[in-house]
Image (tube, rainbow over the protein chains, first blue to last red):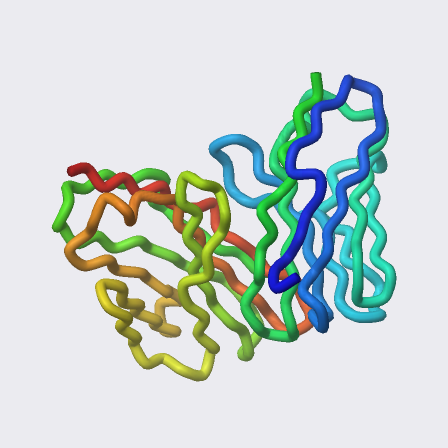
Length: 112
Length: 113
């Protein structure tokens, strides 16, 4: 596709369950980012992948959060043992070096 | 350390008024890029502009204009003759080489009819 694709668009889960969020970046984009946006809040950086370099995981809020990316393709953000405070929109974005970020539409995660 | 500050949390204006959104950044690097993004109520983030640290020319695009001043580390955004469709949250962002994007907290702009 032409843009950044995220799935699912909505996810409702029960507290304590694990969830996986998927991001398909724009083909050829070497950089991929995950952000979290709580309702009415700004963008909270989670993790950044750049080519084959070690990812910048400095934004991950706890060890319940992890992310993987295979080469320059799909990325998966996993949240284990979800908590209610994990409820937010999770945004993925990709870019070429120094170029603008292209954002996906996000995954709305609701933890009951 | 990199940091972006948008001191205005919320702004309300009446349609046709001009409005300026402030952005102040901090970085030790000499090469960096600055961005503005718009997030309308629909939620999708829309790219507005990118400027590099070597180009201090002001830019105008229709009703939008940007004032980049390295001396004050500011990259302000002005909307002339605002319209209701301009209502959104606006984010300023900074990117240094090899590092991730740092976003400001955003400014919520409400344009009233």
